[in-house]
Image (tube, rainbow, N blue to C red; front, side, top):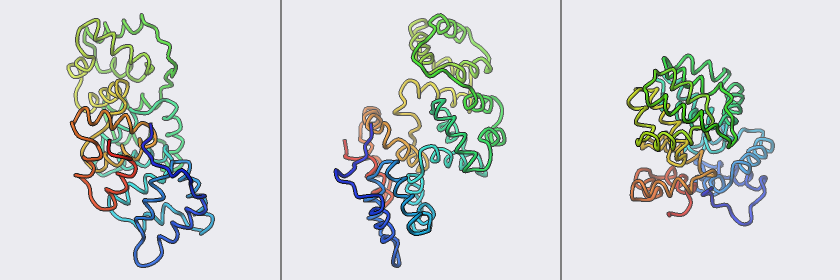
Length: 300
């Protein structure tokens, strides 16, 4: 569920675009106005505002924001005004083309998306980044981790609720016997989310221990992280990906604010004993803090 606070009476996209244009005038931009508008509109509304601004002023809102803002505040706002698939493409481009590949960020994005989302992501990545996503994964990653990511983005997994309980039991038995990495890659890239959810509970009931114990025992490194990412997204998507660095904080809050942030906030307070709003308030500052807290909604 979304945490966005949208006014009961929303100005037109043209009015918002005009007010943003006014905010850019003068020696410095009016960051408060930018937050009051953009942090209180959903992705569809932001896209309409962007179109109005670009058409009315023969300018590109995203580029203007990039030139006017700075630091983490700039990164968060510029990511927010992109459409959801473009947000993911932007994060992946930064992760895969960096001087030092950000394996964690790339894995978090790819392994927490549905097959339908990944199909759309690949199309947007090709258009926005000028290369196939598979090409950049091939160039930036290696070994079994590469095989996992390529398998995950290229496999057409069933997205319905039906499962084959006998296949689930066979997978659980095979995993318990101890298998090589190729087996884990095949299971985790080919099976549906419903199958994986059933596998988690079946493995626990059959062998009295969590499935993640087998992953940690049989695999390591980036492959293990990727497998656990898939597993945890199936178990509790709300908590997947949270870390303490600003890049992760921006990505999680911006991409989940209008999806399931209420569940994330509830899971966060259960796990850490304090609210996510309190954590963001203590770890950030300035307009960056104000923008993220606006996306998070009331402290609860």
